[in-house]
Length: 314
Ligand SMILES: Nc1ncnc2c1ncn2[C@@H]1O[C@H](COP(=O)(O)OP(=O)(O)OP(=O)(O)O)[C@@H](O)[C@H]1O
Ligand SMILES: [Mg+2]
Image 1 (tube, rainbow, N blue to C red):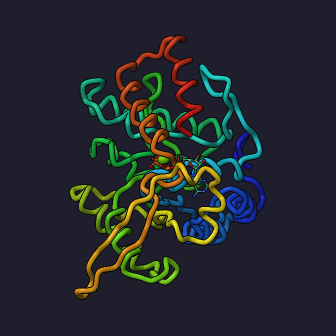
Image 2 (image 1 turned 180 degrees about the vertical axis):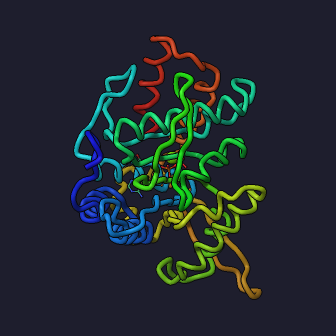
């Protein structure tokens, strides 16, 4: 199944287990992900297959990237070494970073598109079409580059790409696409303030709010329509059950009061400004993003420096 990186036998059970262990305060997100996996049977030949397309959205430090990595950890038994690094990652995981596709001074749009497609194509070749493809901070990407995702994520699920001057065509129906962004977080925060408890917010209302923010951001693209399921990572609240207890470093977390007036009544909640990050972690993350932009070609020295920064910016 899936060559050397096939999915585990019980995807929803394995993912639920790992998220229960590590993800705190994001029960809605967890429930949606596990339910989607229960309904998705990529190896069942009696079903018409479609890729799974999830949009993770939420404020900084709420667990989006961590959850995407945990899903891949749970879904693949094998790990492989990363190029130019001592680290390993799940064999079927392909991770893109939006910051690598935002600056037309480094590459043309066409080059970005080809680079994106070739990386995806070779990963799928290697893993017989099975993959978890994570696009982190997708809000930063130039829209025309994002556009190349539409066909692989559609019902047709086909990727056409060029490698060594040879044209290839590959099926993407066994791919889980996870698009991570902060698009729609203002609308989500407003909804959080509107309801007494986060569990009362209807999922459909949350999903609609995020999707319309996505349609606005990519108004000339079909991308919003290609997204099946929105996975909301709501802001972490000071009062939220289990949150402060879990994050023992919570005294270093920065909280701020959010308020909004509904029907002339002001409603307030205390939320963590940087999620589970401390303020210093958030600053370090921004510094790292700026530096990685400056050094497009990493030398051994800069690689060591990034490893050092990595320790502080998980
Ligand atoms: N809900 C959570 N439960 C447990 N740990 C969390 C949670 N959210 C964040 N963390 C901790 O904070 C670190 C940073 O989280 P993560 O990188 O997933 O945030 P993010 O939502 O991707 O933020 P950004 O939008 O800035 O990229 C994680 O490695 C983890 O240690
Ligand atoms: Mg992230």
